[in-house]
Length: 315
Ligand code: KPL
Image 1: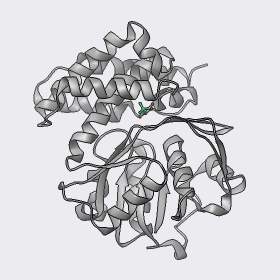
Image 2: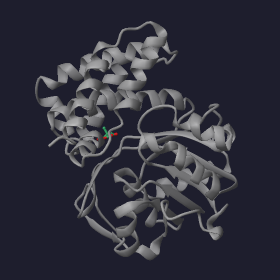
Image 3: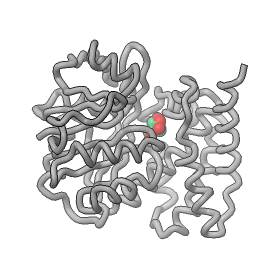
Image 4: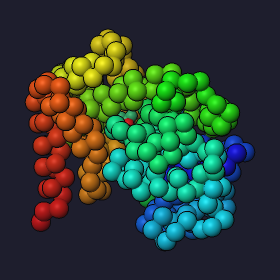
């Protein structure tokens, strides 16, 4: 099987490194300095258990997405595309997925935020698009990818159908890569659950500048619970059947398993990058407006994160 990984940030790096230990052929799609170092030095990954592994550049075919059109020999060459880039890069990444996939090839988004599968399916069609979400925790620096929290990757068909042949091969490959794939027959609910986790963790940890585990240790937890509750009302009014205590347990599980992680939003702020706040709190605010549900906590967190985003551009 040949799999393309689109966007080699922290999670893309974990997936690339995991699949590098299987017999899957790999195409890594990246850009900028990350693409340059993937091409020249390869990828170093620090596992949660402290093992350091070096993936050489000849283990994958590297495509720099900014260097022009996809080379001809790669067009239509992959059976699966895993989209891991930032929420705001979905339009360009779904176009690349469309070009690189074979006619039956499937794309799955494991990005943070909502609506990615819908954008991808408008190019590929709903039968070749899978929804997804991941709770693995990782961060990246010049020393490579630090995979600090083992989680899972939940994948499912948009119509709730069981996995087809290609999806089954992809699930098997992710299993062989020790990435703990789970097939969901209600992927919209799984994506909402991941959105709620991100909303309860990312803005608060980013504004406070703390690792995920700090949430459980002080007053931040109360704030996290309140924004979770507010966002849960919007999820329920949108028709998602989510039990409050199931959601709380899931949140505690993710905070504990990624306690050493700096969430992706904090990493973005530290690196002076744009955050995904619009796709997280912004999504809940927009849905709340449509449904007549007030979302003052999401609005406040979004304004504060945008303020911090701006401050990194000031002298
Ligand atoms: O998705 C994440 C993120 O940082 O964006 C979690 C699972 C919260 C891990 O930090």
